[in-house]
Length: 155
Image (tube, rainbow, N blue to C red; front, side, top):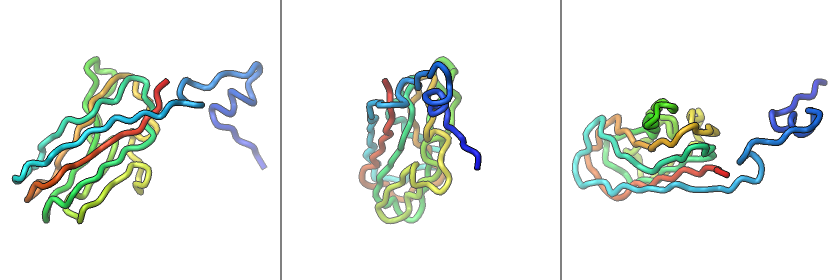
């Protein structure tokens, strides 16, 4: 049987002299960026966007969660980020949550529990970015408050 080692296990146990794990990869502090959007009581058009929280430079994303009330018989979206101001990070419109079904009963969606993990899960950002919700199927009835947060480590 062959033994394999992760990057940090190799640094710690296999490299002579041993190396140090990256900042925030051992004993990192969990931080949260939170935002919410009070959905207007109106039809929300396709391709509408909602700018949300910022993810700081050097943050490693561990989870993203969104909770929401039923938005009627239509409505889907995705959560990603805009390109960084310095163009170091490219935009990714579904990098945090691939698909959000707003037309179901009040629900929540989690990046960790997704059948396909989004690109931002585990990503360490090289520059500050702003999260953005993209509505890719119009809501036929806006109601309630959509709440969203990302958990990350940054040290």
